[in-house]
Image 1 (cartoon, rainbow, N blue to C red):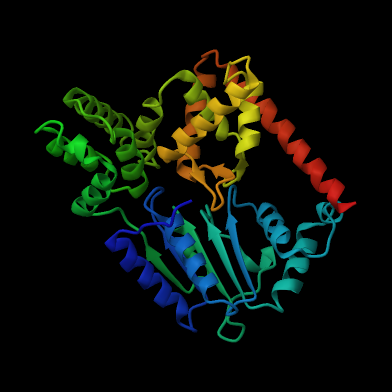
Image 2 (image 1 turned 180 degrees about the horizontal axis):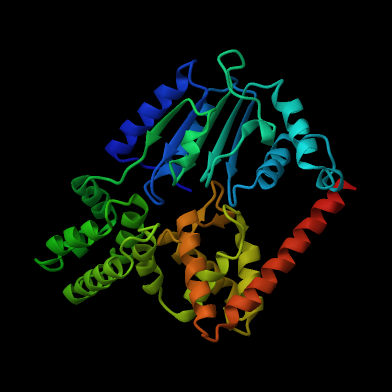
Length: 374
């Protein structure tokens, strides 16, 4: 995954958050704002900055929270700290036992714990996390879409993450557009401003939609984009996650049903799950999403699909390029589409067969963990 490029306002916000966190009197920091405004980007930058500090901290943990239940958070922390329990043993522990095991390890460490997308208030002590203090030098940072978790009594300070200003949004939007696109018709520069405005200052939406429109050189294509984005804004106004209908435009612009099916398939993996490319291609072939009898050609097509989805930023590569994952808002958009296809009575064999494959993969992974623990 290429280095994250922050806008000017995001840079300022990062500096503010980082300087706040460096204060020895601040043990916990809450970053709150709507989905898609760049909270995860900010949290990732904080993690990178902490790691650059070298040995300043004994342990740096990044937890992508999916449901907000204490047990699921404990499970992820135990996986990272290596508590000394085998997989079989800790699965038999109670919530209090796991809290004790986590506390025993973290209480001897100077740690940084980063929670991404915390949906509700949690009790750190119930999880087993020692409260950060000036004495232990530990830090807890979390992002949330709701301001409610910021009200926890252990939160030191909070920072709101907001959408970009119109000018900054347009600057980000046009970075992806090709000069040949902007010069292809005298009306297009003005139309790009309208499309950028309809992305409502969400950095994620601006990136996805600009990639989608990067090579569109016909005025009619830009008018179509504006029409779709306007109608979706009106139809879904007042919804909790305003960015989702905007992101759906990128999905609707995918070329071919197999590309759309392959994209939706990725959403069936857990949140923030790193999917090995070779495994994903095998799954696509097995499900018939890539319907080519020649195995070698099918594999090539699979990797081309992954490349296209990464280029459009619907998937993100890891640092070494072996795995891909979905941004949590992109995944929510994909799950919403799949849910609509099922509940609407559309005959979509992908949804059910992919779900079966996902459950099989989960059982396979658990089996692998068990074998390693024996």
